[in-house]
Length: 272
Image (cartoon, rainbow, N blue to C red; front, side):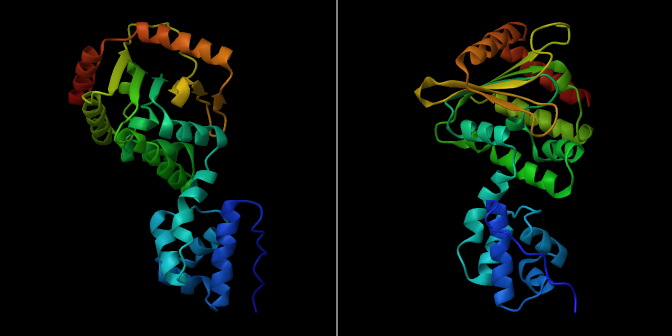
């Protein structure tokens, strides 16, 4: 006989409870990992990773688990498990974006996550994360874009360094699609995009990108990007937020008008 499975502690996190519930229901039915895998279109190894909280479930997996076990638990908790795996500050940013009235973004090296295409986001995250981690972060990144489709979407002002518009992450073909998406978004009445031209060699903001969120009741909070996952900071201190608001205004003053920016994006896209 093989070794008994490692005990699971369902009290440590939602992901742990999710995995424990899968194993409990599976063992009650006398199914092996492979048996359940066949029912939910996954390998036994991936089922094991689900049970140990090492792989986040997507919505389809949650749906199939509910069908296999005749429950209503797994699909409705799948998104919560994925969110739990996202670093706290980034999770706070996404939660703030969901309710924000206005979003001001400064990016100096990348297309903002709020505007990324699937391919751009996938290539970027594959560079920074591994396997299930990158899948988890991709799902989170794309979930963040839902506020743009609200009945009353937030006003979004993106100020972006020209170099970010010339960095073809994912290759020329994927990057052309990304630039097309920026052009399309720039035509929406609630979205403005301004590029800081390459000629602006030295200006405030070269050290880090950041986001300002105007929340209901007009509270303004900020998120400052970190160099690696988990190092970004969510800032509520009014004095520090004021410094970032002032920095954003200075950066914006160095940027091109929105119409010139749209023209620049088109020129870059056509040159690829």
